[in-house]
Length: 171
Image 1 (cartoon, rainbow, N blue to C red):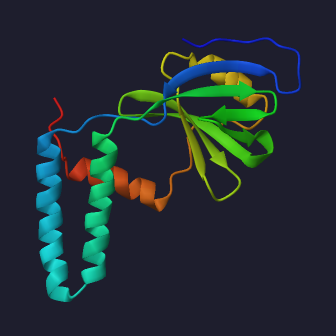
Image 2 (image 1 turned 135 degrees about the vertical axis):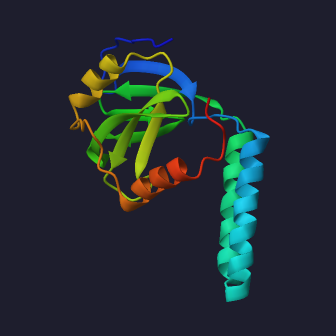
């Protein structure tokens, strides 16, 4: 449940809530079987070509996906203040932020903030039960809102690939 705090200070907390640190959806065994079959086929082709390093990268990427989808994320405290956003104990100033938009991953609503500096390139804050209008109003006073985010080549490719190769049945 979001809570609004009204204290008079430079770093006044405007909105505070607790949510998961990242979007999370446990995957089925069917997902892992399909992914491993596809990886195995690609690895055999790459083995004949002699791309051993690329095979290692593919298996390492699969391991990261497996770890992130089996280990549930922790709950963290998010705060929107007058000076910036604090999430999970890390504070980010408004001057470090470029723009924001709303997105949905794994059935969870979140606000995505593009950062000016390289790392992290985006802040993704899961909203849970926080009203989008409240977040939009508070953040929109400090940085520009983008209705439709700019999609990179990698974004478009991942969406296309997930549509063409379903790893799980969608009912």
